[in-house]
Length: 303
Length: 150
Figure (tube, rainbow over the protein chains, first blue to last red):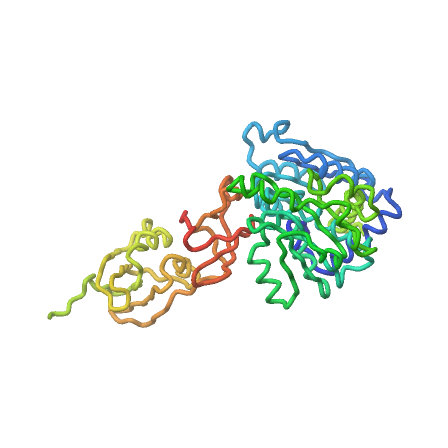
């Protein structure tokens, strides 16, 4: 059956991104709209993710929908050995929309092939988490008033971090993005993305530590440098303190600059940054509810 | 020196030539020739000017559509197909690497759902020489040297 799902960020066009931005702003202004009245939404979390699940469930509640589902697979028939295929087939008979998180990569794409109703990927292993990217974009839009001409600094784990790859892919749809990558050599932005940027004539710069160049940033997008990503623990020890953002480093940064982080934060943003008006990561999480309301409304053609 | 056919001729059918020697049994498997009831002869480690050593398969009374035969492009990218009618070659074709590959190979990513559930794999071919393919499901790229045949 032809239904529109959101599995990868590239499933949406630029027009759809802009529509999500408009709808999210509308929902932020009027957060309680009964668009999902009489509809049942399934949230299937085959692995726990409290933050993402609560954000989606808040979005559904604000839209007046009912929720069925589970928050980890031990409380579902998956623990009895049911296949993903069968779980999705069954649930798609019950619900109007499926929101799922699953540890296996490609699971959400497969679910969208099996399901009769739209599927939103709320994370499939290390692969995709497109609603995170849309809330990141909404946060950029809100704080900068535009998605064109953004000087974006991506910091931390740029090799494995799915959020930075998806954000990069989405921002390519807009005019004149400038990318600055700050990462240790072990976690540098993969070549495939650099080649893609080069092929489109888009500027990018690589740095292995924070420098005064962050004064040019519109957005600093922080991610966590995880110890388990390093083959040699000595290498981790060498770099672990280089990628920590501290309040004193923000002195010369632009007035409009905002710091984003997909959260959870460990220590990569020092707590002394939290009171700086340029710290935006908690508001960013709040924006996630409006962005998710917008995604749901769009996929179900409610707006 | 007397010239002689190393694998006997067929009256009607298909000859698949210039198969790499190591790929012979993979080609047989991909084309599901185990299930073919027609006469099949094959030779391996035959002398070849172009390849030094090659394999050949002759299948009587069996003809292949392009999309069927293009499946072997992953293992025998330089294979040539001769269609035989009444002992004469009436058509010569070369194998073309398809844009999408269904089944045949598994995704190299151990965390891909296709390696857990009973799902037919699907890949978009990104480059042909060497072959790199993007998994439709997990979006990871499998390279030629990482391919495992199903």
